[in-house]
Length: 171
Image 1 (cartoon, helix red, strand yellow):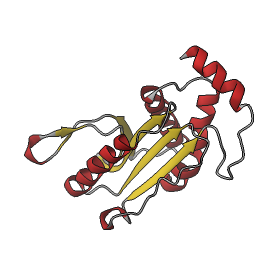
Image 2: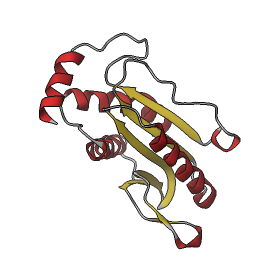
Image 3: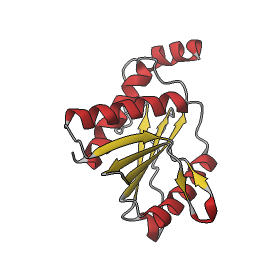
Image 4: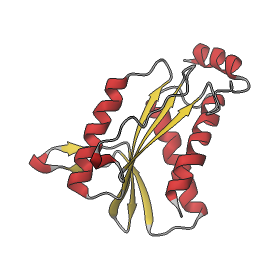
C-alpha cells in the first residue's frame, strides 16, 4: 500500500465525513476514527507486514517515554508516525508546536521513515499548515489539514451550518 497518497488525500476526507456524521467531537474521537480508517485500508490492501497501534510507548534517550498518537509498524519496526490535533473550537498553535518538538525527537531516536501532523479544524480560512520547514523537516514531515467548514478552494462545504448547529448541541 502506498500510504502517503492515501494519508494525504483520502484520510482527511474520511475524517471530515465522520465529523459531518457527528462521530468526531474531540481529539480522542479523531484518534479512534483515524485508527479505524488506517486499519481498514491495510486490511483492504491485505498487507500482512503492517500493523497499526495507538499511543504505543516509545522509549527515548534518558529513559523518557513518548506516546505518539498513531504509529504504523512494518515488520514490527516503527515506520510512520501520526500526531493528531482536533481544533474544532479554535486553533491553538502552541499545541501544534509541541507536536513538532516530539516529532523531531522521534526522528532522531527512532529513524522513522515519515511523520504526519494531521489537523482537523473548523475555521473560515483554509490554513497553510506547512509553515517554513526547518532542514530536519524537509523529507520527513508532512502537514495535513482537514477543514470541516471549507474546501481547499475556499468554497463552503454543503450542509456545514446545519451540521455545526447539531454538533454544538450534542457536544
